[in-house]
Image (tube, rainbow, N blue to C red):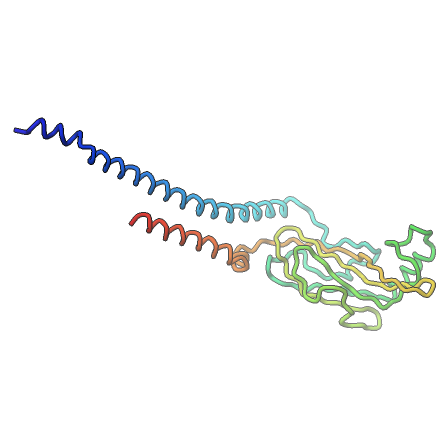
Length: 238
């Protein structure tokens, strides 16, 4: 027969109760530690992936519901002077060309300046404009080779030509601005003016694969965070 006193003694053993309590507390601490390590890694993954997905989705909707004028001239010239694609792929470079008869442009500006009153001349230009000009393109979300004012690559009898290699860095409708740097002479003083010639609107399609290649450090950071979390989990579970 079982000894009731022995059973009673075992159930009231303080050491046994303390051990069970310690084991329970240890399990709770391990569970809490595991949760505290997993949650930051999961949160990091969400914060990095979701914004990119939303951004791509919004750009896709905007491109489908928006009519874009490919080339808008700021100076009354034929828009054929601009050669740029209407659509492009993100991170894939393309060529942009500008072909302008600088003699004709200088003549046109000088005629406008000569009949304009003070403060009403074209883009604030005064004085006599030289046909020797430099061209520049700018774009907030583009990587542009040969940035800044450039001399023409070709100066033929009827026109000067400039060429740039451009790489879009962001998707959506992106703008390239064409500028002419002209020199005016007034009372034996020379000034350099920037004239906005035109702007080209280009619809850039997102390129997820190339985005991953160019932003490899994001995935390296995620991998490092998950690796550290895994190592710490193993240490606490031993």
